[in-house]
Image (cartoon, rainbow, N blue to C red; front, side, top):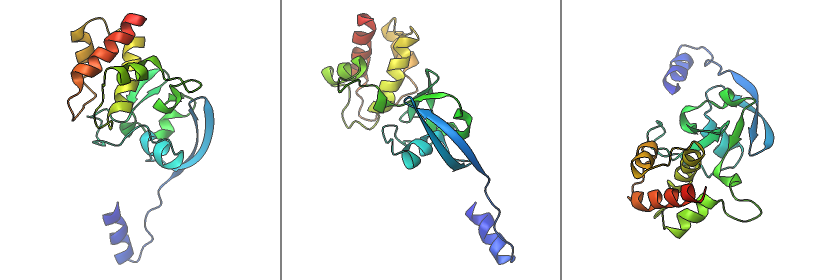
Length: 172
């Protein structure tokens, strides 16, 4: 985009205007009215416009899962989802999982099993794991490994992550 703007300035033309969109994002049960560049991702809207920094920007290509959030109860990589696509949908972030200061069972299981080391991937891992259990896909070690394969951990805490998920799935 900067290249196009530079060419326009050299040619004596005004740089192209990026369309803006008014969007209401219902995040963690609260509506937020925003005016955004049409290209803004859900991840950037959450982090840069709403100050919700739980979802992390890892690869910014949808491959690592660090930015995983729920949209209408389903896990999505928010770096590949446009904020404008989420108008009228329920967005849930890791910030809303604990209730009255009590951690969500998955958060507690992650702590109990030391399922994080550096912690960078942990919010996305937890969001994906919560969905995995809700989807009924945590039936075996192989299922957990398969359905969590979109969430990468550079520290290699996978055995502990799987143990935490198994515990929560067993608790129902």
